[in-house]
Image 1 (tube, one colour):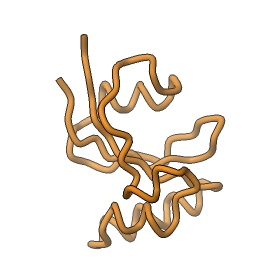
Image 2 (cartoon, rainbow, N blue to C red):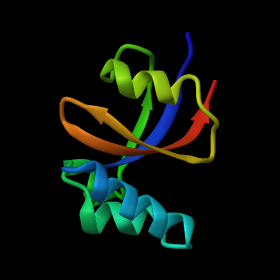
Image 3 (cartoon, rainbow, N blue to C red):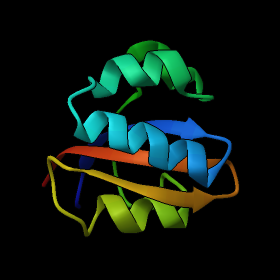
Length: 92
């Protein structure tokens, strides 16, 4: 069974998500940005969601984590919770 580990930052708007992504691409630390801006309780841990299998996260989230490039920040990804920036740390 496939497994992945990822961190994320949950934001209210697509614009806010794009702005934070730009700051990360310009050198801001993903974990620090999660602590400062994420609307998810995981933000306190720098957005770390740990390891999970397909189907444990919402469909839109799973599609990115189990198909896109590891080690990059992806998003904005819209789910029913808001807009996510997703950093895939590993996948097996």
